[in-house]
Image (cartoon, rainbow, N blue to C red):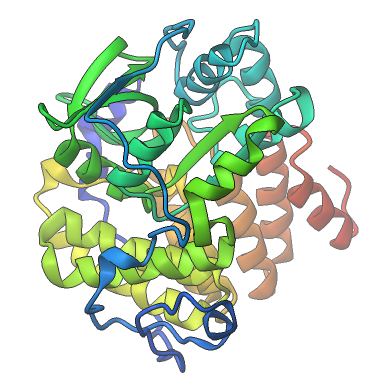
Amino acid sequence: MARFKYAISPPEEVVFVPQQEAKLSTKAILPISPTPDLIQDQAIAITPSATPSALSTPTKTLTPFPQSIQLTGFQHEYQTWNNCGPATLGIALSFWGWEGNQQPIAAFTKTNPRDKNVMPYELIAYVEEETEFEVISRAGGDIDLLKRFIASGIPVIVEKGFELPKEGWMGHYVLVTGYDDSEERFTLQDSYYGPDQVMTYDDLESYWRAFNFTYLVVYPSERNQEIEAILGLNMDEEYSYRSAAQTASNEIYALTRRDQFFAWFNRGTSLMELQDYNGAAEAYDKAFLLYPTIPEKERPWRMMWYQTGPYWAYYYTGRYQDVSNLATKTLEAMSEPVLEESFYWRALAREALGENKGAIKDLRSSLENHPGFEPALTQLEQLTATP
């Protein structure tokens, strides 16, 4: 059914054009200072830093990592439909002795089996609420950071782009479990392709860029000090987003086409997380205006299935019509409109525009697609409606 609909209405032809002009941010991006007091005061701009490689370097001196490491002891599991997140988390947990599979993780994170995506925060919630392990997630990772984790005996989940010839671009989770500097490639536990897949450093970096270099690390609590040593200043979540924003700003000037679109999008996401909504909206505008220049076969038209940053940025800058339009285009382009987040944000926008009936309908659709989705339940209560 999906292929039939997409053949009639190719989703890669759908283009969202922002209608409202972004307000210029009052902040400016400067190179990030390693001094915590200055981090609080530093502004963020879109000029390349003179020393971008220093941004994520831990302050502690760490032992150089070996040329090659391959971790073992994983229980691989192939994913069921749209289940790469739960399956990959299950593989990661198995490394630490967890005995289970993707089914309980999927039941926890996907109350609707037809859900297209599991967000990182949903995977984090499962680890925190249903296991004895710790978990940390940050943006702005890099190749050296992955290698340092693996050299310390700690595998890393990354969220990245993924492409199939007929289906096109989509999001995908993999577990990075090894590397080899002589071949310049990583070993991945891939719930779609199978165990012990390999990918070059350059290819992983390119696909990882689509998700702001986001990574998740699951580990036993006794490894806390090692995690802190590896992450250094990036233990501070605000610092990590400032670092990621700087990386995106540098890449905007170095990349073209789809990769440049991702860089602008990443800048928006990092600024949104830093609550610079004006700056984020401006960056997302740049990304969306660049999108039509990407060849249709390369367009990441599923982007809003996985990331909701533009909704936050446009809503909190009063651009309610853009929120509504973006959500509508996202939902209409899908063969099966099951994104609870898009229904929710369109409901907020409609309420702000005085369209309460439409808002209530969207909130109910959000709950139909994700029973118990707390933001939608709360909003319905505020509208004095019952789910």
